[in-house]
Length: 424
Image (cartoon, rainbow, N blue to C red; front, side, top):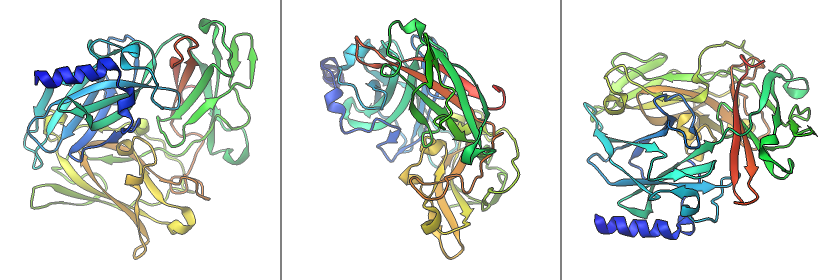
């Protein structure tokens, strides 16, 4: 073990950026035994992977290993640029400490038909602490071998040098009138010193932390002194309001979950949950309810500790098709399992016999929001099965990136959370 540790440490001190080219600088799992990856702030599981530079409140990484037993996992952080491409700097340029942390906090499942081991790590730590803000990827590997990837997860390390000031309003016109929301804001960059706002500052806006419809590299409509005005009228900051997320409630499996058609048990003792077929919400009145705005939560009512007592279930979801995929394009299930993005693994299968789409998921007990999204690059609007409304409850995250002229990295120097109902 000592030999493996020293070999691993040698890699890191030498700078491993060139050795990490085979991994994906995105949310990914490289081991089929890994399930239920979570990354949230402190004790609040309904928070995005965003944490302040030098904050005393870390992010918590959790994941389950379905192979059972115990394994040796380690993690480190990799710095990326604005476009989530790895920087050329070695790790000891942007990290302090030993540059790697072993995961020693793990527990075994209790009473689960599918035994698993759950792992926990606090990020950053004293041994792996970022020196700068920016886009980072936490990289987990196995047996002290950097070349044995387990998982990667994106996260944001932020500073509070500038703070956007803004509000959300109904879309002012065009195709999204009555269906969309404008995110309007200004940004005073005086704290950054002498900057070229068009080349040194870039702004990204996320709706409910979704990846598939985020807006990047927004530029101001005009500049007044050190104040950048992003009250854009060209549609750059106009989002379809979409609809409230649908909710999959698996908190208990002792009774039939809400909207479940059946709950059966297979030969292994694994619960098989078949949900009622979802239908299109296009053209239907908008109903406001608490939908977690895209952030899922592992929780169980059938035990005390969701991390060790939570049961796994095979869940079948279906959607009644309004038109075949050759008209609408493929349909994807977007939710926490897909990192709120359109992912090939979550493309639904079309069944021409009953004109439905279907997908099967292995999920741990919890509450999961989801949407049916068509695309990308299809002729139909992506919300064809969900509808879009100007008064949908949405959370918008504004991130301000600054291209540091000395260090040549993209720092995140400010952020703001706006709510479409509260911040009007």
